[in-house]
Amino acid sequence: MRLALAEAEAAAEKDEVPVGAVIVQGDRVIGRGHNQVETLKDPTAHAEIIAIGAAGTFLNSWRLEDATMYVTLEPCAMCAGAIVLARLKRLVYGARDPKAGACGSVMSVIDNPRLNHRVSVESGVLAQESGELLTEFFERKRRDARAVESGGLENR
Image (cartoon, rainbow, N blue to C red; front, side):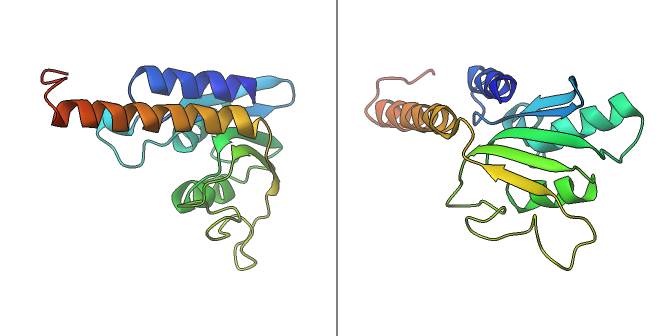
């Protein structure tokens, strides 16, 4: 999870929502990613999707069986669906997402009984650190927006 936090920090440095993901199979990292929605101008460029793509390329297979994804924020519906479709064995995430979480918070795509694959889920791992990154990011964004409104950051 510490590697996923490092990915989240890399996202924050690019002014992206600080979410990071790492996929591990055995004792090796096979994929990693962080949010790049703004950078790539792609609404699907979530950390999880990027990590899944990297892992698929690494393994030369879309089936990521026996792999675990570590992600700093509870996946959204799109990412939860991709996790199931990629056949990941396990998902470990940090902070819950009460607005868009699809692994138990708002909805539960990840363990929908109609889907053909089951993913083991563990939540709350390094949740405080993950949550603090997000809180600090959005507090800064709000501060910057107020500064722009008051004329303090015209050229930012």
